[in-house]
Image 1 (cartoon, rainbow over the protein chains, first blue to last red):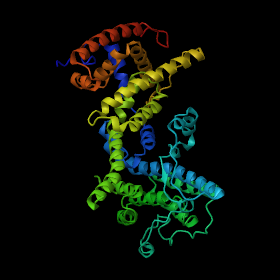
Image 2: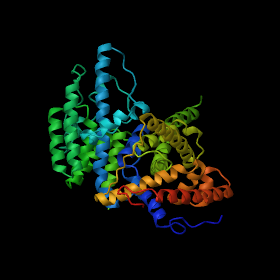
Image 3: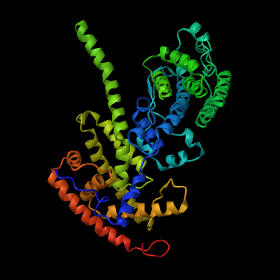
Length: 275
Length: 194
């Protein structure tokens, strides 16, 4: 088929070229992309920044690389943190109703996410923490879900130098009789994790580590343990502690090699390995 | 059931969701920017395009099994055309209800106000020119002139004979020139004809 020349190259006058070139800035925001990924439940499978690199959306590779780790932490934390709030609510509800353990799907209805008021809410100061929660499945009973127990080998864990991973130095999860976290405690957890995440976004890995240390002290069996561990890896990488980051990541991966947390840990390491 | 068959069934049951998720992830990774841009250029306002893009991919997610491998982009683009039509219809209804000529807010991303103003005006005029084209012409125009696909790619994407694509592009260009001429005569905000 004969390929005509583009109008912008031949046939358009200056005014028309101006119109056509104004479309060059058309590009989605990273948040829009992440939001869609979250709605599809595939966020962890699509490395952050991949699309902008692949499609030449104007970001340099360096910028993408720099933002990638922080953005991954951001996405994970926000999606999972909001999910944890849901988990907490489910836990409280489950306790009140004495329902038997069951799989709880907490996928948010797409039309709810498209609600203009929801968009407005996300555009405020909490925007950094407010992409919609990824579709989540909570395959544990409520009483376990709020304080995940994923680590069978506690002796190995206690030997790990993992200062930024709140659950890492704790013994096995809480006793069955341990009280469920209240909504305020989940809020506090989210605040601390948010502090770490924002510090990472600023490139301040040390402050992120400090915030995670506080988190670990206050919530040794916190509901946001996985998020804290992943942020810990990112913060260690940010502060140049690559070996310690690898140790933590190896621990995360070993615990549940095919899980989402392990996939995220791998992604963080891979991203940091890129030149 | 024999042990090998049971193992096969278990493997299939285990891998099917993973394969689906992986396909969905690839679908989003490879097409999100293209679909977002296409929606914007097919008339979806800046304020509505994020939701519209999400909607397109959610449709694809629901109907993933029906999408022929290798035809993912075509499926998404056809969905985008429908979603864009619906979004622009709703926007027009809303404008009529509000009795105004609501101006879409655009995030220029440009630090210089003059640059931003100039770019904003051109972008809004482009929206206006494109909106005047019939949808079938607009689609081909957008894909060729803005997305810079080849004629063959467009024909494949739209399932159209090449001759039809060429014909639509020719007519779209004529319409574009006509609308651009009309817009050129519109006064700029400072009162001068552009």
